[in-house]
Structures are given as C-alpha cells and as structure tokens.
Figure 1 (cartoon, rainbow, N blue to C red):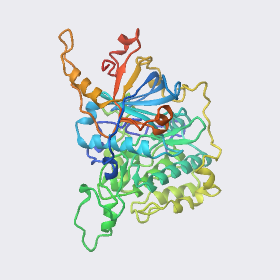
Figure 2 (figure 1 turned 90 degrees about the vertical axis):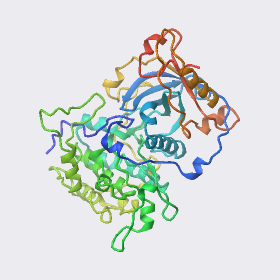
Figure 3 (figure 1 turned 60 degrees about the horizontal axis):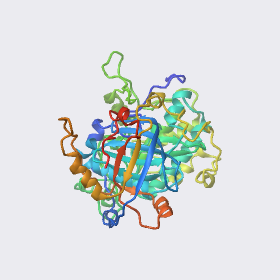
Figure 4 (figure 1 turned 60 degrees about the vertical axis):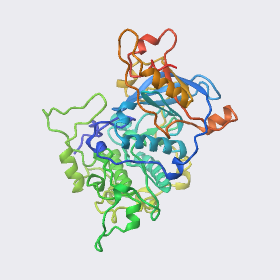
Length: 477
C-alpha cells in the first residue's frame, strides 16, 4: 500500500518537453499533418517581435521552459510560457520533425478552454520556440507531491475537465497519447489545461486513407476491420506508467488508448501513485535525474500493465473503484467507452453523479483549489529546482519573421568564428512550424499571418553572462 504522505514521482519525464532518450519514444512512428494543411500557401511578410525572459519554470530532455514578457505590440507586457527545443535533437530523425509539426498544428488550430493555446512559434538555426499561454498554477503532479492524494470530490473535478478536453481532441480525430499528471496544468482560476502535444497524432477518419505503418493483412477471424485499421496507429510512445497495453504491444490502437491513461491518472489522483508502477530495487544504479526521471523498473511495470495487475488500498470508494476498473480493461471492447471512446458512457458513470456537464464544459464548476498568485509572473507553484535557476533571466528573444533572413543566418552560422573557434553546425529550416496567432497579428496590422524566423539576442549590457546558457543568444541577425 502506498504511503499517502509521500509520493514517489511516477513519470519518465517530469517536464513540458518530452524526454529525448526514452526507448519508447525512439520506437514511435511519424505523426504528421493533414494533407490539407500541407497544401496551404506560404504568403508571408516581415514583422518583428521580442520577448524578455522572466524566469525558468521547467526543463526536459529536449529543452527548457520559461515565462516571458512581450516587449511590444498590442500584447505588450503580456506574460507567456516559452518552450525552447534544441533543433539538433529534433532534426536527426524525420519522425521527430513530424512530432514537432503536429504539435504546432494542434496547439495553433484547436482552441479550447481546457487546452494550452499557442500564440507564436518560430525558429533559429539552432532552436525552436513555442510561445504559449502561461498557466500559473503548475502541474497536478506538483499538487499530488504536496498532498499525497486527492479525495473523491477533488479527483472528480479534475477528471471532469480532463474528460472535456479529451472529448474535444477526439472529436477532431486527435489521439493525445501522453495523458499524465505532469501534462495537466492548473490555471490561475483553478481550472485545468492539457499541455504538451508532442506525441499527439491525427487519426484519419475511417474509410479516408491511413498511414503506411498501419498496413497489415487481415484474415476472417480478426476482430478489427479495415475501417478501424484506417483510424488507428501502432506507434509505441508515451510515458510507460500511464501507457495502454495495446500501445506497449504495438498492436493497432485508437482513441481508447487515452481512456486507459485516463483510468491510470484517476487512480493516481485517488491513491497517490500510478496503478502499475514498480520501483527499481534499492541499490540500483538507476536513480532520479535532475529532469525528474523516476526510478521505474520498466520490465516489472510492463508486466503489471499487460496483466492488469493492480490493487486498491483501503479507503477508496466503491464508485471510484468501479470507474477505474472499467477504464483499465485489457480488451478495448470491454473498456468503458469502447474502441471509439464514447464519452457519453463515461459521463454517465455513477462516479460522475451530480456533475452538470453543461457547466463543466464552460468552466463554471467551482474548482477545489485556486492558486494564490502575488503577480502575473508568480512562479511559486512550479518546482524550485527550476525556478531558482536564473542564468537566462533578462535574455531577450527577438523574432524576425522572414525566410530569407533565416537563410542568411544559416550562411553566416557556417562561417568560422573570430578567434579561431568553430561555429555550431546550423540545423535545417523546419516547414509548417512558424506561426503567429491570427487574432494577435490581424489586430496589430491589417495583413495575413506571417512566416516566422527567430534570432536570440541578449540585453545590451547583460549579454555576456547569458552567452553560455542553453539559449543560442549569438544567433543575432
């Protein structure tokens, strides 16, 4: 039985950017855009924006997360979250580029109260930048680390809003694939927002084509028909302790994989640790890293998932146990919601009795926790391991929106550095990434959206201390 006063960090990557060296992530397949998106014309004009780094709030294997303040324009002084990803880690494999493009597409085009929105996206020769909504209440993971576990009412509130977010994604043929407490953020008003769509995938509608990696010969005894195959994937990716068995086994799966993860997250909130998590034995070399990697015994954890081997501690209500048990079904046909993830069946479960879903979808249910914020840039609800790191504070990121400028920067970056040094190898331009929110751009200038390219520059007198940081502050044009 888990100790309710101490929570073992249950994830493989406690961060807003997915971990780069996960063996599960490396085996994942390409996740792309819709054909219609790839055919959109690139009509662009030049524009410049800049953001000042206020504080670091997170770190992952791919990059860093900061809060930043806009320096000009109609959103001057607006506070955003900025995720910075090292291009070198992305451009090594085409599938990783596909993940980046898909994440940008989802965040830019799917606006919802329970999903973190994208405002800008741009790139230098070395880095990718996402400028997103800042969600100041931190992760549900952090709340669980403080409280150990939640009561039924608190769990019900967060589960309700997570269900609303998942239903919205599924309605747009998106399977999330990385639901975990780390990716559920709490807004300043106490309501949740899903973040990190780097593993999310667009599933073609049945009968309208399918991915090449989903092909296989089906015999008359197979329970999965061709239409189902066309709306499925076989990529093995996500965070192991919340991963559905069909994902681990790389069998064709669809939206129901998110329902398994939902059950695992609900169990986590009720109990204080994931249902299938097994720790590495004492004395093992594998320990938690600075980025938050858990000491998970992967082999034993996989065994538990594939055999649905878990138990409830004393004190968990019958209604809660019933919901989790119905979601954590190995056979997707018996899983609550079924293969097609019918959320009406989930909403109708007795655990959610008393929830007015018309109010829940409008964020009108009173949250159990509202963060006490002292300022718009308050970072007290994030991990001090990151917020105490101030080496990049004060750096200004300048975005110059122009493909020709990017090409010029590429050429300049390949020249030798003065003093005999060798310049870092620049990375290719990534198509379908750069973005400015049309709501922001059209309000500031009466022109179409623009194609972005970024350069990072330091403040006039504070450039030197930041030049050795994780940001490519030397990419100035």
